[in-house]
Image (cartoon, rainbow, N blue to C red; front, top):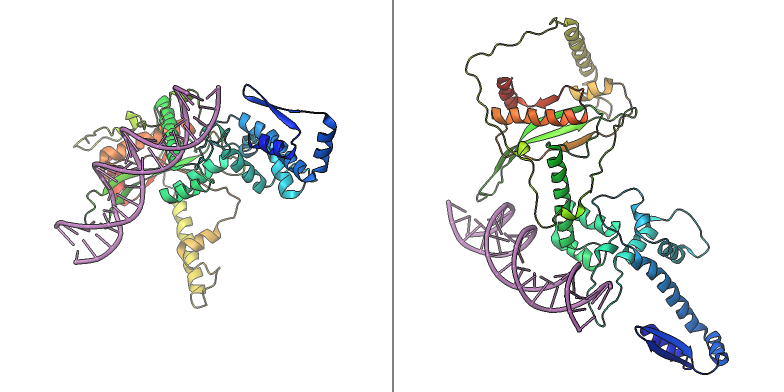
Length: 396
DNA sequence: CCAAATTGCTTCATCCATGT
DNA sequence: ACATGGATGAAGCAATTTGG
């Protein structure tokens, strides 16, 4: 309507005919004067050009129907916005002659924000912006979720949302619930808890430790003395493992967005365990247990070398590569090979005391399940610190 | 115009740092 | 050890906006 009024104001020879919802513009008298007037009015023809360009791009934008499925793929930024919008933004930013295939991140960001903040029809005098889920783009989602994950500050997300940069706080909550439910569904389907960022085919080590959150405030009613289990994988350039972080999104509609699923019972229920009172008979090993004393010789030789190094260097000034400490010396003696960052995953926490034998037994079961799934041929490797190790010995 | 979606507001409960 | 107030989040409801 605004466009119609502008056009009518500029070209009074035009007449508007209403036909249902559409408005037809037609010339009342003959075409000549009107055309001439349009050509003369250079200023407004720019405006018409802009309006035309905008409506072309808008049509593409509003036709988009994206849905956030829980993860971003590599080209999600480009795929989230129509090509015409990208081209337009790129032309505005870098001039119309550049036809580069590689869009800058600024182009992508601006285009995504445009798409995110667009609406099909705005009511006269409406103040706020209502965002449509089907036109959500990766950038505002990423921004909102990341800011929440790092800071957990609601007002920060709210102000970003009011600036049109991020999704609303409610939407962040909704997405987090959705992710939880999806991953719980996966755990239920497999009947074991195995974080999806771990990769099949890589060696796994596990660590069990007690988690003690003992708030310093005197009124903190409950402290947390639980158990945490971490899994580690060590990818190398030769074997990076198969990356299967994609969670299937089969029955999308069935997942409620307002209630949280629970973890499988087989994970959360720690079975009680009674240790036999008497000494247990150890099974006989089916291979000879011989003493590899040359390992100890090698180890003591390493220690001697370290002590020699300390003796040699302790009088001198300490520099970056003095490597005085035990760990630094031995690390410097290792051969350097390229290695990728370790993949770590933390399993959901347990409330049970980590020193109890039942908990340790359950940890072993849980770790074994995860190892069997990811790297079936492997013997589980578990590390623990001293108080837990005592209980561990009892379990064994 | 109207139903559906989205957003804003309020209330209530809980947690926890801080001060006394 | 206790009170207090800020921060947070869930839930419900109302208001507003959108899109057919």
